[in-house]
Length: 299
Image 1 (cartoon, rainbow, N blue to C red):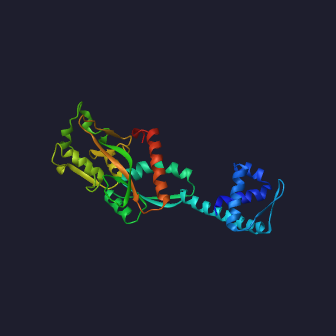
Image 2 (cartoon, helix red, strand yellow):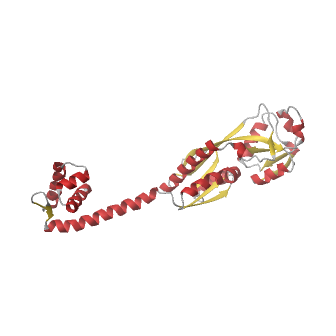
């Protein structure tokens, strides 16, 4: 027995004729008649009494009609229940670094939450290592961190590209020079992120290409993006920030040979429910829309 045969039987029972039922179902009458014949053959009884144009239910047909209604209702309930698996609702947690959690995610999640009233999100800050460990241990549902990420148990998707610039307060003495050479950074004091941060590692790699280290010129080492920005705005030194987090009080120091880029990746456990995959897709889609509408300098 096929479920469509139950649907066909119910349509005939409710419309009263094969002609009306066939029209509503988009079938020819012979095709509809054949399916009912196969249904009756499998049941071993006649469910319809044919006489002229109209049809009536037999005694067995009356009984089968009750079962058919219940089966259709149950099937609709199953479809409704499983369709909810594809709806983006529930509570999810995200871990990301300071730049993403403070300057990028609020813009993106704001739009997602507007469209998804049944969705609740919590965001916690952590560096790349902390974020990856939290995802692997199941402490958070989704992580956003710099790559590369080589974990067979994780789905990894490209999230966003970022450029890192040397910056300082607009009244910093370095801007008094007409032309600034990159090796002049060796003479400056620095306000940096803590040594374990992904941004710090990317900057150190570039710095080491023309100088062994920052040396004793490190004035401060901080963990939060906000702390670094405030210290730079106060004129405590030169720092390095994502293009997305440069405040209006700070100015980029432009060097001809400065080019530091990194990529953020979104990751989640492969053995996760469909809701998490939907959330990842929604975040990536919203990020793409946000990136096309807004330039980093406007943030």
